[in-house]
Amino acid sequence: MSNPINMVSELYPDVPFQKLLGIQVVSHDTDYAEVSIPFRQDLTGGGDAYHGGVIASLIDLTGALSAWSGHDDKKGMQASTVSLNVQYLSGAKGEDIIAKSYAVKRGKELIFCSIEVYTLTSDRLIAKGDIVYRIV
Image 1 (cartoon, rainbow, N blue to C red):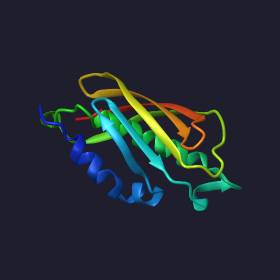
Image 2 (cartoon, rainbow, N blue to C red):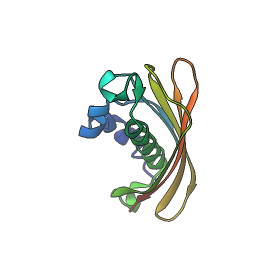
Image 3 (cartoon, rainbow, N blue to C red):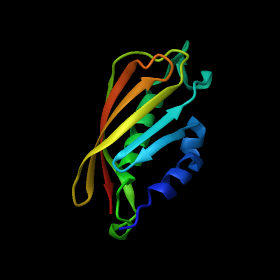
Image 4 (cartoon, helix red, strand yellow):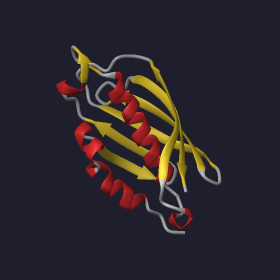
């Protein structure tokens, strides 16, 4: 079984949308990924709090990266998010944020991932989410 996670994690920050957000792949392992976004004022929804769309995007991107880990590329390389669920718990004001994702179940095509988002400095949980990701 080949593992495209190294290739994917190297290319991830260069995808146009990920570049726009300024994501950084912090770490990855089988069924796991960590991705951060450094604080930028232009990513806020007003004041110093991140726009909810930035947090939802981080949840989606980190979940997708964990879904790629352990994937056998002989089974296909076309992928998409099937569903995304976000629970906002607190605001992230003026701090870098980091998401940690686990692929908790792998089916034939669907991968179920659970993600938590924290502030990097104060390590405060600000959002939780789940995605279902499909690779064929």
